[in-house]
Structures are given as C-alpha cells and as structure tokens.
Length: 478
Image (cartoon, rainbow, N blue to C red; front, top):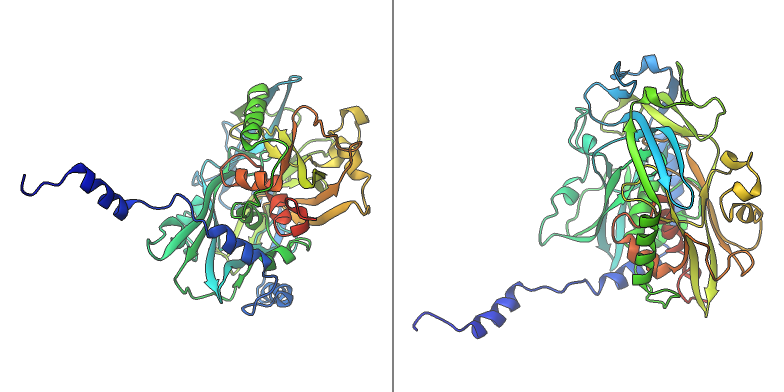
C-alpha cells in the first residue's frame, strides 16, 4: 500500500540510526597511554608535592579534639544512646549486632557508622595534548594525617552535595549528576562498598567522566595523567582513599590467561557468600556490651580495635568552613598485603573472601592479609589471621615488590592508616592449592571485577590501583 514500507526495509535503516557499540574499544588503549605518561607539561610530576605543600600552607587548616558535649548539632539520643545529628542527616554512630555462620560460628557487637545514603566519588577526565588527564583536588579531610591529600574531582556525600549543611555548592558536581550528551562520556560508573569494619552498608558511586568541555580550574585543582598519579602512589599519604578507589574502576584489562576462568572466580565468591552467612542487625548504641561511653571517647577498656572521638575542624576551602563531628579512630596501623606468584609466567595474587560486619552482600574479595596486627598480638599463632606472621616476617625483605602507607577515609576516620604491600611468595609461603576461602586471581581478573559493584573491598581496590600503575606487577610482564 501507498505510504507503507516492509519490515525488512524499516528494520535495518532504523538499526543504523539507533544502535551503538556495546563497549568503547579505544578506552583501554587511551587509559593505558595515560598510565604510561609519567610526566606532563600541564603539571610536571616533580612539582605536584610542592604544589600540595603550597596549598596546605595557603590555608589555615585546624583540627582539635573536643569532648562530646562541645559537639555543635550532635547529641546522644535519649532512647537509643546513638550519637546523631539534629537534622537526621549526615551520619549516626549506632550499634551493630553481627553473627557469622560458616566454618565456625562467631558473633560480636560494636559501634558502627550508619550513613544510609550514596555518595559520589567522581573523577573528571579530559584529553590534553592527546593524553587523558584527570582533574585532581587538593582536599582537606579532618581525619587524614597532614589533612591535605589528592582526592577525586568530586568527593561528596549526598547530604553534602544536596547542601544539607547550608554551605557552598560542590564544584564540578554537574558533570557527574547530569552528564551532558555529546559533551560528556562516562568511562566508569559503579557502586562500591566503604570499609565494612566501620560502616554499615555504606556505598559510594565511583565515576569517571570524560568531558569535551574546558572547565575553569580552581587553584586547589590540577590536571594529572594516570602515570603521574601512579608515581604519587609510591609515596606515603599523598593520594587519598577515594581517589584510589575510583582509579581502580577505570584500569584496562591486560587480557592475560589465568589459573581459573572468570566465571569460576565469580562462582567461588558466590559460594563463599552462601557458605559464610553474615547476619548484621542494627542495635541501639546503649546495648553494645563491652564498650563504654565517656566524656571524650566511646571505647573498649582493653584499647583494641577503635574508639569514637569528637573533633572541631576549620577549613576555608570546604563548602562549610567550620564544623564539629564524631570520628572513628582505629588503634594501630593496619596491613593490607597481597602475596603474589607467577604460574607459567603469569602473575597471580592470592585473594581472600573476607567477612566484614558492615558489608551489604556478605564477603568481598580482599587482599591476602587485611588486619591490624596489634588486635591479634595476644593470640597464639594458630588463632591469628592466616599468612599474617609470614607477611610481618618480610619487613625489609627484597621480596617486597610494593610498599607504601596510605590513609583510609579521612572524612569519618581519624589517623586510619594501612601499610600496603605486594610480596613475592613461593610454594611454601603461599601454596598453589589455596586454602579454603582463598583463590589465586590475576591483575586482569581484579580489574574486570572492579568494574562492577561489591566484588572488591576498599583495601583490594587500593592495592589494585597501586598494582595498575606498576607494569612489572601486571599479567605476564617479565
């Protein structure tokens, strides 16, 4: 009939207009080129640490401990004992009742940070002189040693970016909450967990967005290549946790073969989640036995694990320039270490399926060893975490392939640091037949899992970001 066309004619022409490739085949090559660029004319690598010092000196940052009674806007709720903000926003220090049924049943109660909202960790990318650069921020966090570290372009909780505090708008936020078609291109986007030992079911949206725009760059921001960020990851307390987390989500897969196919690795983690049943129930803080609430701290009498304290902070570069808040302060430096071996020339890393009471979906993939050694010093070797003593014995050893101290999340944690290690092992130290709850995986497999939410925990993502910037620790590199 006149005015009608056959389906065979309409179909292909419509498809040509609306169908798109399922993946950006050039993205991996462009990210790899940025990783290889160890310097840049935009901001030479040698100048970055000096720039950070200048930004630190340019502002009067101040953090001081205060008793709980001096917290502005915070109170202990009379019915639950929870430490909460008067607006009901931001976060609450509450209790958590955890039980784990697996190889053996265990249970405990602890204070925990409850923050039932999703934050944004956003890294803005732009091609400059043919190489992808990423807009990094010199950001003050009250809990970080030195306070000022390199953070993503945007690092904000929902309460902050919706301006519940009544402060200034978060810079560059629109690139992430409303990317503009034709101008902005999303390179990575996934929900990732926070520290499951201290947060209850907290997730952040980890995003990398490339723009064709030419945004004005504030003096507390600078463009760096991934290779430059990698050089800075070799230094202690320079690149913050949120930046490391986002970086892990955009790394290119090296395509190397592996001991176990990807499906088997996912099946292993799924089986571990089924085997290790974690039940975590919020409970009033006043019902958390074994912890005392004093004038200046919520803590255990034996000074193990962590305590909750209060601080007052001043930072002229933040959306709100002065505030007070609780912070969780761990006791002692933590360790996050991957043992690594080559099998038929391909480097593998020994990962564990680690239970943490605050994780939303049960165990997540973690480094071989992840703990604070001081919490286990009183126990006999058989009761300490597997592989811990071997890692501690490697101090100063040439078998260490990577080592740096990195700060954890400085907006909620005070002086929380982990010594991050990659250690070459042999059959005696880390057998090919991995113990139950452990699995050998490649760099490429970790990269593939990091593109999706709730597979790799914070510590695994930190080490992946570090490994991803060191070519000799990847795939079948010699």
